[in-house]
Length: 376
Image: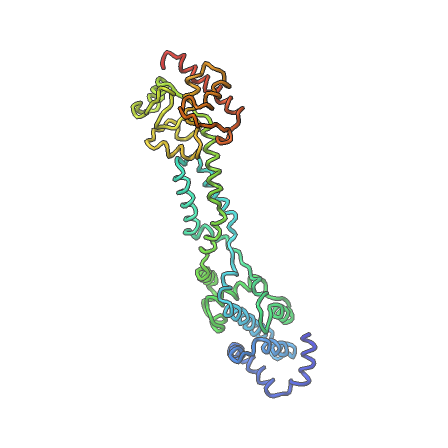
């Protein structure tokens, strides 16, 4: 197409004074000429056409042709950013999937350390704040996307820039070239500075200034929504239930021996002789806080959720000479809770009848062992 325009225009315009004057102006001061075109709302198409003529007619060395072409491309990018200032944030995105995955792993790995729901929630808040505040967590995850330039609407298109570059240079600018054009445009601000500033040798520093302009934290904050806190809390709750699915009674003698061997004070514990449980310490052997005195044990147990099997152990203890099925029936009837409105539904406790009967069997053996010991 340019060849056809060239052949036609050469016959009609090449001898006109204004045509030659514009070419001379472009050769002498491309920046001033292109800026004047912009002021007169002519656009870049005139400079592009004349540069093609200059190259075709060998009116300037290749190095100068290349320099003028770079001026045109830089102006194209500057205009794109000027017309859509908000577009600056579209050039970069953060590939945060791996970082979010690391955050989730750290939280899940910390499940055993959480004594309360508050501990769990504070960990999430801390991890997400660290993700936003510490730039080293995400600066290396920046991905550039210059495709927005392909959607620039105006008198000159990205495709025309690419085609002219291919003709004059043998190749169009690549992604890294356009990244530089964008950074120069956003940080240095005007065409002359973009082309002549001594700061261009400090490109990495210019990139840092560019990143400051686009507020990467906004993208990080958006990525935080990818972490479903409620879903994660359900995971934590399920983990807690699995760890606390077996609460075993302990005799006073066993507790004293434990205190002796672990440098604990027996008097710190609130021992319940009617069930051989402790009022102020977790009794799940798999729990990190097993037999750790806690004046606020209810906060720990609250992780379980709405349904706790109240008086379940006392029922087994009181009727441990009965069959598992009969003990379960007495528990269902609320005989030890004194709550005749009590209704036992296994699904409320994330269990089944079969699993409940097995648990009763385990507890029966534990209580029989305690009752048969001379060291109760």
